[in-house]
Length: 381
Image 1 (cartoon, helix red, strand yellow):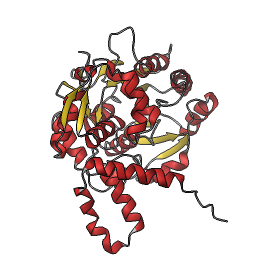
Image 2 (cartoon, one colour; image 1 turned 30 degrees about the vertical axis):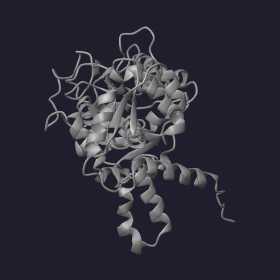
Image 3 (cartoon, rainbow, N blue to C red; image 1 turned 135 degrees about the horizontal axis):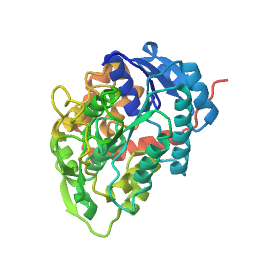
Image 4 (cartoon, rainbow, N blue to C red; image 1 turned 30 degrees about the horizontal axis):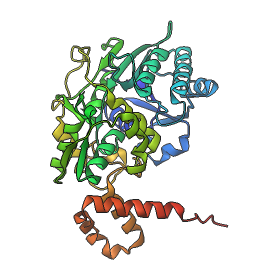
């Protein structure tokens, strides 16, 4: 496919920042859009892209962004407000604003990454919102829309993977409620990027497509696989009467993940997350080395080296220096804190922190994070 000019909304996010890298590597011209474009300067690809201010929740901002961006062939829509109050209504309004602006700008295609929508009348707010956003992006005489649905994305820095990591790291006994056996089709971040880039090709017809890795598993089996690959002993314990609604309320208290974001994702586990038969295989070849297995994706995420700029990652499964500070595990957080208060001379021995039992590391990390959060910040005169 010839080079196209793409605009990436949500370019500062986990998937968006890696997608910009993948598009550049594929020869695309990229316009990175953000509500706060000054933050884009933190990303390693900053000098290789154009940037525009785009607040999808503001109709005028969306229109001005496309005026400033110039001709665009494909828009990647990665905006979501999951974890924020009333995100469902806000997400619908944002999608409608962008769809109208895209239509007026003469863009030919929107590629939207959402989630699976199981055939169920009582979906979570998160899953319902993903389907509503796809509908809001599809307007009369507007650009065609390719909607890719994905379940759990495996890669260091991905919220769903980090939640998995922290549960397995912090609990010697892994709670296995009834919904932990619901089937899931996870996908590696590298495969997500492959399908996103391919979806810019006009040979891919407009429509909804679910993308997945090569294996169907369960959330419980994902926890077991992580523990095995990370080399930690954990015992699964069946528990009953604990629904996702209750778990979602306490997740933010026991995991160092933003509470609202984690809660909305947990509630989605109430449903089987199986890809539909409507996949991309008829139009898009598999990734060059084949789809990444669950074990390989987890192994690559667990084995992440020190953070690097997102465009310099050896592997997109690794942590980037622009990924959330809470990501990467408790041991990594303790190393970061220790590095900040010790002279460079002792930094080589900080690797010994890795021998601290992970539940202990979690307790120490929680205590230090709480203490640091209470220390008043000094404002320079």
